[in-house]
Length: 201
Image (cartoon, rainbow, N blue to C red):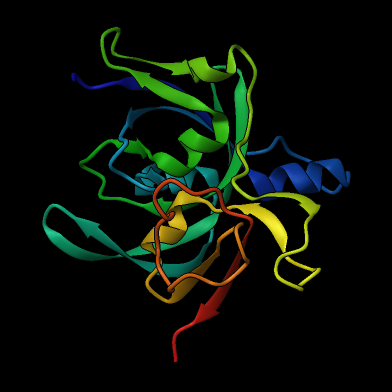
């Protein structure tokens, strides 16, 4: 897949808030720039020159895993990001001046865009049509008694919990309500009526 470069518009979010409160006499600081769509990156990464033009203040630090090892990066005040008619507010992480601005997974998922590898462009998520949508993985349903326990709820478990070693998932079988052995995956062939989560000691 070739590189996907897009045009983005960035605005200092604090300036927008002050403007709404009628406390800002000048126009909000805004920058138009190009960014590389990088599905291997996590956040919104901007060059120091762009951050300076926006007037964003450093608020935190974060360690970032790069192709050259772990780097200490600065986290800056939020910026309003506009891409292809959609917008969202995101914290900014700085990146070296000699590399492109990067649009990572968090803004891509929030704005509901995906990469079209054949057309080498950014497009709205085809599963959602032309509407920007979010996805929620917890789905609570009506109560159903399980082996004398009236308070368990039928629950769909998000896939990402399989990757969290700090939690133990106990599945309840619908036949007699007896808890199965703690496990991280759905028992083969059975429907699931409940789940309990507990930390390992």
